[in-house]
Image (cartoon, rainbow, N blue to C red):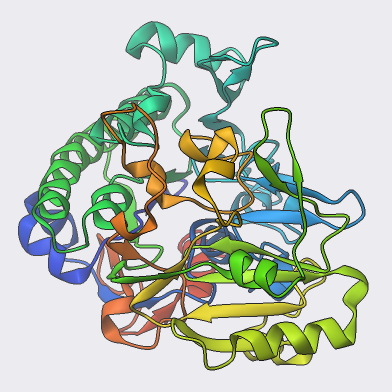
Length: 441
């Protein structure tokens, strides 16, 4: 009989959370438990690529949650297809096996176009008038129509933004159970983002974050029972937290520093708002939680030195890596910025580049993860008086991304069977090998 393995990617899950998660604790009670150390940068897309390839960003090329294409002077945030990952992933290896192991990939980033047999991931249709229609990219193509008929549309508004809540993860779970019954894949990889929201919005130990842990456990109980029943017997369950979220009480604005130094240039949009002028800027920063890539035009050595000098010793920045120094964290990839800025553990970095909020572009006050040249967790908040996203970065109370140098920056890896892995600690790059070993590979 072919083996079955389910890998759950649960960002923000901590070992101590299991005390309030009876369903997950029961599943893992007879299995293994180890600390799981995320590799820098400890953010969604790189860590998911680490776990599914067994490689670091210097090899698989996913150096952040977004990319800057120097030749086109364009930023791409969150929309890249699977071919941005330059190494084989778990499902690629399984597909090559003579036994023909099948795989399902449910909601991780960069899954569009993956070679998995079954896929579901958000892919809203962007209409000519600027509106969006709810939809998901699926393999087979007709699958989303079937899931929509059974469950309603995927609730994208609850997947990110001020309305983000358990409803999105609940839909992911229910659709996965349907897929498990229909396809019975040998390997099922699911991304369950619910713990990400409250921990960033109000802090990882806030009442809202504690409530989110209980909400997730209830949904996990449904997932565990549903997939166990669909497959006929319990699979090997692996639960990996991508990273842990830590409290923050400080924020920095790298692009404003670069602008005040005369290195970042802006241009006006049609409504008078300011946009980064990538062509005219000598340097600008793609910020991502607790780190950023500073891209220097033409790799100008003098500008690289100026940038590094501007940030070294500045409050909120722990490390400034220029040029070959990026190899310290295996980040010396061609997609990386010439300088990498790393926050202190109590601080994070915001993308704002305007010096007057009146000149902020319209998208700054909306949930617009694709047009913003960086990650914006303030989108988890809303100003009810204006029904818009506020421009107050101090609202954010939790972050991640800096190197995991302490226990509370590490996640946890759980299994449902003993002997799956040792006492640890383990690294995110170990996960792919553990999965493949479960298939005898």
